[in-house]
Image (tube, rainbow over all chains, first blue to last red; front, side, top):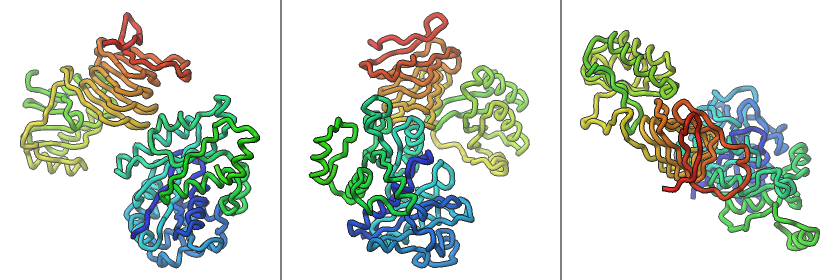
Length: 266
Length: 220
């Protein structure tokens, strides 16, 4: 059965596309899937840094497209799990080095080799974004609970619908339950009401993420933090498991938190 | 001029058709019609139908220039004349011979309507000379410009302009009327700042009363 190509995009920058891509890739691999993560942000590559694989890059996506090397040569294996590979972006080139047709071809190869290929899209709606979604079977839109990020997500969903890639599914990142409770932040309901697409998961704000991205150790490798749990749940939902949605805005006293820790999950 | 320039709304957007007559006269007529409601056409795209009139590249360029004054671009030229179609292609415009059946065109200012059966998202825009009916929401950042009324069977949170060709009697109604900005003809209104409050939303209709736009419960 051919694998699935999923593009992770947002419109707005800085909402966590790269972190989400790295962690979903890692989590899917931990569940025994064969996974490739692809950095489509040519000229501003980051995924390799977040995954801690920067120093192993020899060939990149542009080399594959230009026929300098074969796809297999450019894939960097992540030794921390069984079947996880990174296809890095070129840093010395720009978005015009790759066309949507090139990406469709690369995705076609990835589909044959892997169960899942996750493509980390650059911010914006220009060629980099167009390249990133060209070969996608599905699209995941990442947003934060901020009006500007939601507005951009809405624009992206419109563009994806126009390309008949379906409405996509939604990840709400960096939610702060305290602020939602005080009414100072958009709630999950507020965001879903505007965007009106399927909610794939909610990731709470978590300082451990900053540490893990700086170290190049995806947070799901150390699965105890709230963000790691949320990311793992999203990976399992992608695999078709039915996991109830985490509700961080729910009033959570010390005892219910204790109970949750004992149950071992959200 | 009976047989001059006609601007019509069709299913595929605005259609400018040139009738018989001298080109300079037609151009003057076109400019006059566009200037009657410049805001409506601003930045729009139109198809140009020129019948069997043979036109050179220079002729077409003149029309492009007149439209260009208002930021309007031509996306296609429809003509029975192979010479005109060739000239259009030289200018990089799509060209086609007219369809067998005349499009279901309706004159601007009459009462046609277009129905949009989906949610309009940020960055999406609907421009139509007649009425616009949306079955779905109009999200913030989306835009509707209509010559007639605008009816939204859903939440209206984007920017809308009804009666854009100068019709003060046009109305805007929605199940939930919270537009970013609402215009009727030359009048502009914004939603009250309190739109974060979650009061029970009820259908409302906005219309011009005196010199301002007022919203009232929509009770047919």
